[in-house]
Picture (cartoon, helix red, strand yellow):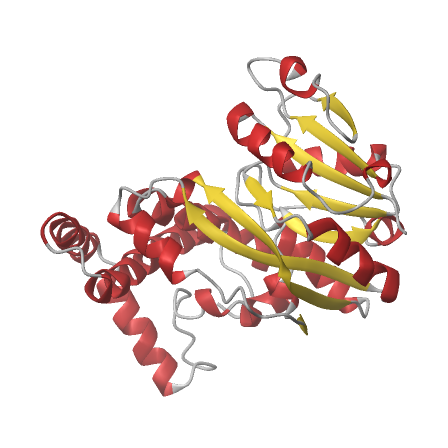
Length: 327
């Protein structure tokens, strides 16, 4: 059986980290083959009291100056002694079969990156957005199978890879200094170019208690930041522009390359993303949340609001970082 290193970056989230660690104590894998590496990215209070408990596995804490999650993961990987690296965010709780199921796939296949079935779960179930988002993302837990997935489906805080392959691919790297920085897309894209296969084990589950899903405003602004940094991503990897569907209608119209239907989509997106219409949609969503929280009405409103912020972020990126490609 393969030894594994679970790498958990953390920053000022002691409570969530404790839940993540407790879930790992329930794993149906040999505990002497599991090591946990917690990389503290300069939290305001030390983690000693949290990790210096009677855990069934070997656990160590590495403290770094506030350098961001990407550096934390790379530093954790350099310290790892396991044959397989399990990258896990500090707000994800995994099912008891998570490590055993994914380790078995790495024992069977060679050039693979493997993910489990991640279920986004809002930390604020009292908000209509939190309830609707969580319900909308409850993927089928009965899928007792393993499937191939697109490299874009790999998430930086929830994937596994053999240690040697991680370093062969050049570790994780992002764009810009903020977050999100597209580290997962860049890494999986490099793996894709090197002939790797991407697998999802549907019965190895993780529940992501994501604070940014507490309300539509927080969620939309996260995607605004991601869309702004996507401009840097496309500067560095121009081929990716055509491979990220959620940004297709957020980019400027290319009269030479865009189809008529795409020109229309982009035109509609431009109009809908104006501040006045975005404000109107947000006010309408707020009214529905208060008086008539129907998922059938709110889901499309949430999508359009989020899309407007993504449009805004992407065009902020163009103004800040310059245009790219054929634009």
